[in-house]
Length: 218
Ligand SMILES: [Zn+2]
Image (cartoon, rainbow, N blue to C red; front, top):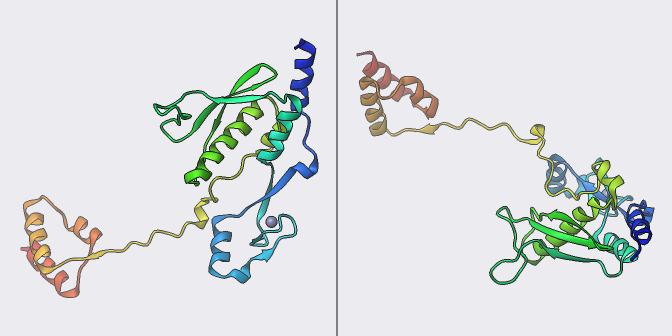
C-alpha cells in the first residue's frame, strides 16, 4: 500500500457524515423522565426522534455503530480490531471496571480505543462494549470527530443527575425505647455520650424528654 493511498484513506475517515447518518438521541433530565413515568400524558410523540418523551427534552447528534462500521469498510474493507488482552478462557479481557481496551487497525495503522457499557447487562453489554470501543478508537482516527468536538457523539450513559432534580434528604429521626434511653442517659452521665448527639439521632416523646431533663440535670 502506498503512502498516498494510506494518507487519502485516513483523510477519508475524517469526512463529515451525511445528515441521514447522524441520528438524534433524546437526552431527558431525570426530572423529565420522572414526570413522564408518573404521568404518561406529560410526554408527547416527538417529531425529531419519533420517541415518546417530555416535550422539552434536548436531543444530541450521534453517529450509530452501523454508520461507523460503514465508514471503516468504505475506507479499508480489511479493517480489523482485536482486544488488547485476553482472559484465561481466551475471551477479550475486560479491565477491573468492566471496560474493554481494543486495537483498531485501519490501512495498517493501529490505534487504541476504550469502550464501556455502563447501565447495560448481559449480551447487550458486550455488544455495547465493542461498539463503544470501536467508536472511541475510530474517533482517534478523526472519524465523527466533529460530533465529539461538540460533545455530542457519545451516547449518554446515564440520566442527568443534576442537583436540583434530587429531592432534599429528609431528616428522619428514629424513635427510642425507654430502656435504650435509660442506657443512653447512663452514658451521658459518664461522658461517653452527649445530649446533643442523642437529640440529633432520636425523636424523644414528651415523657422521655422530661425523664432526660430530670436525669441529666441531677
Ligand atoms: Zn425526541
